[in-house]
Length: 74
Image (cartoon, rainbow, N blue to C red; front, side):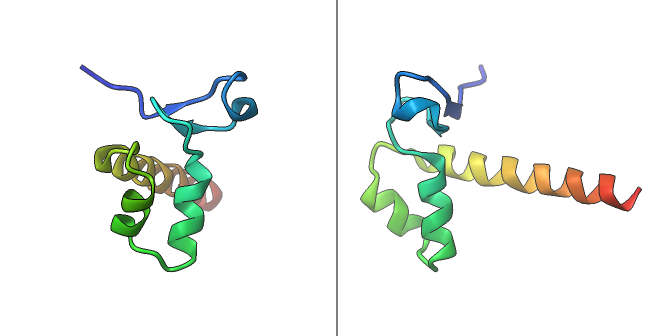
């Protein structure tokens, strides 16, 4: 069974992408990592986000970037 990782709902934070089942915007994870924080630091501050969700978001981002890079090279 595949569980939803990201949710977008106009009723939650104006439709900003959030971790499914939470009100934590995905961009907050990226901001923490850009600032040099460890994933564990982010997860401690936002306990409603599961580790598997955060890792899945990062994997999806990597896949999108790889796809864009391949398309640009073609």
